[in-house]
Length: 219
Image 1 (tube, rainbow, N blue to C red):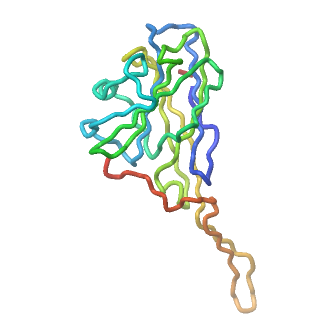
Image 2 (image 1 turned 90 degrees about the vertical axis):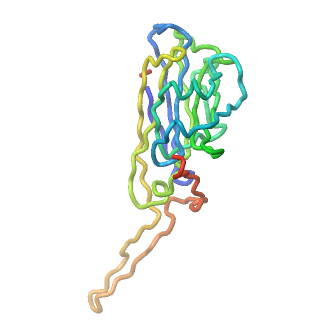
């Protein structure tokens, strides 16, 4: 299962929770979870992706993926988000490990691919119930610094090697109130009103920090 736990208006960040329970089914083994976050507002052409660097660097195990292998997986793209470094948590303490691939188009980072395995890139143990959380940064100021509500989506996929076995999509409605106007008093004699205008009610500390790249375009 996948769900959004909280949304922070000040940090414009969503906390996502993913639970992996195969009900003791092995699904062919070599299990791992993949999750693709695209910084921009819409899908990119996979042919434009020219590089994929991993953190930590890995060359063997289920956490290791070449660019061609990533493209062949045909992962669901979810937009306007970026992984926030250091926020991954292994909630059930089942020895989970996260590898992040930064995808680049023309030398510019456009997406994050999360690959979740057990330690040292080992396959997820199908006899365990795994659960993890992480935070994504909303990259689009038209969402986090606006006066409206938007829905953000996030899709996690369970793979056996390169075969997709299950996908689940969670969503979170995000409300933003950057400019708020309230009538505090009305004078019926001269027909005037006093208004209170609140700017940045969200409490953003980086309202001008737009990292959106508009060019690049239960599991």
